[in-house]
Image 1 (cartoon, rainbow, N blue to C red):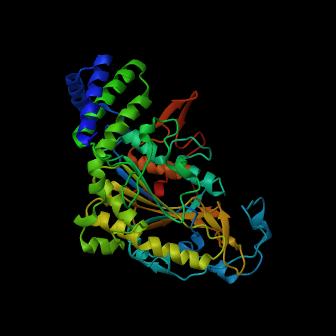
Image 2: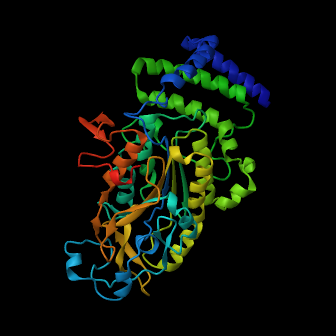
Image 3: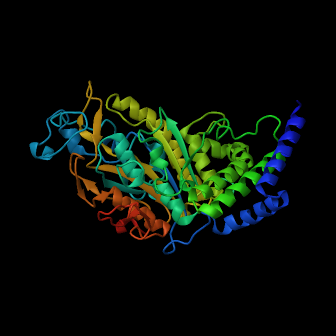
Length: 472
């Protein structure tokens, strides 16, 4: 049977099926149009008003999975260099629990040079020459702390506010609270680069107990952005549209009867996939970007890279996507610290700085928050042979942000002389989340969903505070 005969037979079967179900084709077409208008105005992804006017409306989270060493990148410690190779003070280790090493391991001095950069005088490692050039645009927090010291729970905590699987991610809460301005692309998009995916897996961008319409959608940056996005041979766009209209009408009947939000998610997924058949290839086509922009990021269009993900993040935000998260899983330097950091910074430094520069020159940085950081820091004590590795460390680490609502060129927080414990302006992950939600226009205590008898929220039930010092 020829393809055109298959299509005709398929259409005949659909008409019979719909007739048996009591659904007319005219009604389907009319319902499809009306439902599209209704979804735009009141669907689960419709643009919503936050608690108060937010300073930003988009987030790009550059997640350095595996945990970069703050002691080699942003938190220079002369005393650590001075006492390199000696045992740490005994009192420093009271109650300390390391992931792998004996806490009595010797101290390891920083492996790279630091210098002050920009008018703000931020101390930044020689490994990050491009980031150093945008120092005056950054808000650096050198006093982050977390509760977890293994990768999966710490990544899930940083992304969902809990070490337990099954909680909504920061991106999902953002999409739930604000909706999306992207009509033809997902409102929450995830990219992954590096040696492997993040240890916490899909839970890092899951929607938990929120409807799955708020899940992050993982895209690839070469080939089809989503597998099976293209139509099979013999199925044209009109045929697929008719099929989706029929499926949508039946799903809508079920939704009207059951009022199950997952049915609405299913409808939205079919419609989004159909629209992405046109929008996703356009998103990935970098031919409209100037050579100067490609060079700024260090992008080779035909190659997969973190740099390409950064450029695509900017293009997504331009098209209305609310939250974009880039995972680069390569920072777990238990050994080979020097070469590993050189490689990782070489892969990411230029593109991170380019993203700030590009957003700023396009007038987009004022409404976009860019976040850089991992799940925890690294120990001041050595791990591995040859004095060339560091273990996991939750007591102190560094993250930076840039964008609307922040004081640029500001560094807050301080760790002790060995970079072991925070001694000034302690910022827990919960405080970090509360601050991001505040910038988006939300009171973190009021952005909640009733689930299992509790008012569930991103920041949980323990105290969380907006970091007022960094707000403009």
